[in-house]
Length: 417
Image (cartoon, rainbow, N blue to C red; front, top):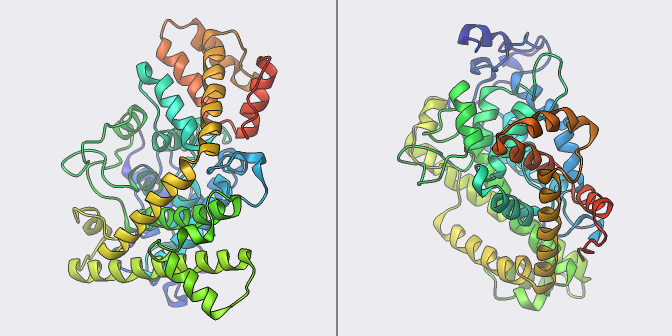
């Protein structure tokens, strides 16, 4: 493994940019690009981009990012062009993450990179696919979408001549696996540590027992803000519930009353948008005020003070957290567990199960670009190696490709609608 001195090669500031331009007026607790811990494989510094800008660009140009276009949030890809996909969701999360990072004077590019890549490890058919893959992989190390995101950016993306993966900076990798908090130690909350994360951290220590950077915390809370608001939007537009159903919801009911009073007779689609944009705004403002209070109390002088804080600093206030939980509970019952959605979930599980069993047994051949790896795994007595290869292949599928593969291999395929 490269030593620290070698990895410092990627830390020179871009030519033509200076602190006097305002570009580097970041808080002392921000992740400063010039102090990055570097990359696993050393690379020459870019004359025009910081390490975090390069990471953001590599993420956007990756195959995994393009696949998000046809990966489900809640509805399968052909349900309608106006519903969220993993791609549109990730872009919306990135916008909120940048706004929060700007408010806290930390690195916006790092926050954006983490927001854009946070769903890389998600399977086709959303959490349904993840749950089914985890069950199928129970004897082979299980499946975790955060661990899969790490596998994608460190191993499965094969684009560069000098290394597998995207060779992202340490801070980006750390934020990708720890954006929800520590994974080991007294603050790891007893979470089982996924094998892929443990293995990579042994090679390139991700400091798993401490909290993540403030940039990663911005990306994490931005995810919560985005999916609460936008799932409400999608659920209303899909007819899973109606505006009268949300009158008693915290925040939402008040916004509905305000909009109807201010704009009587406004068509429903605009009413919904007015509610959603108000919800996002008030949640973002709450996080900023709460985070600023936490920072004022802690008085951090470096990014290491953030990691050692023993708690998440970028979060909702207690009253807002209760309101957010109520919205989540409503969405869980009326959207994620709606009868029509549950029917699709069961059919989607069957598609994942059939495909896994077909590939793992060797009854179905892997595509050409996976062929060599499959033949090596098939010849190996190690079933875990074969199972992980099949899992990687399935996890990377889009909804559309999974359905097409099932149609190619089986006589009958669920319609998933």
